[in-house]
Length: 140
Image 1: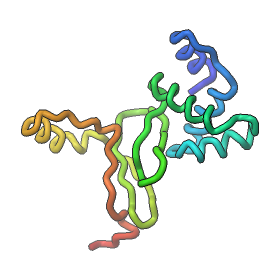
Image 2 (image 1 turned 90 degrees about the vertical axis):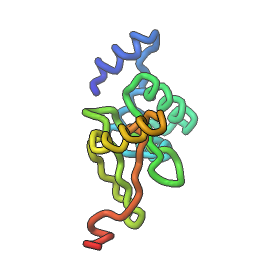
Image 3 (image 1 turned 60 degrees about the vertical axis):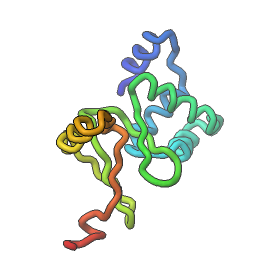
Image 4 (image 1 turned 180 degrees about the vertical axis):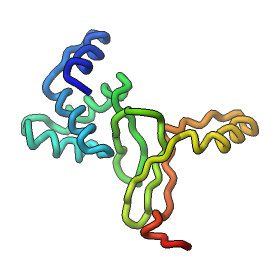
């Protein structure tokens, strides 16, 4: 996302573009999938004065603005990633911790069945499936 478009999104909400907000957004886009601590470490390389609390607050704001989203890809901290393209589901390898993305549409048959039978609407943006990737699981 460009400085201009981020500034426009913030201005629409009555907020201003700050260096910290820009750095956090750039870190998320640069890292792909990152915990707040990983984002903080990347931001700190450029702006050592940005503290972890600012990173958490900025991530929450960026998520409210629809620029980033989060998923729970481990038992640890929440992982943030950019909102780009179509929604996707995360496939997380339990051995090597590799993360793959597949289109959320792959879950449509299951999501439809769950909604029909349980009246529950699945939010695919927050779905993570854990298992073994092809490399770690072989052809079992």
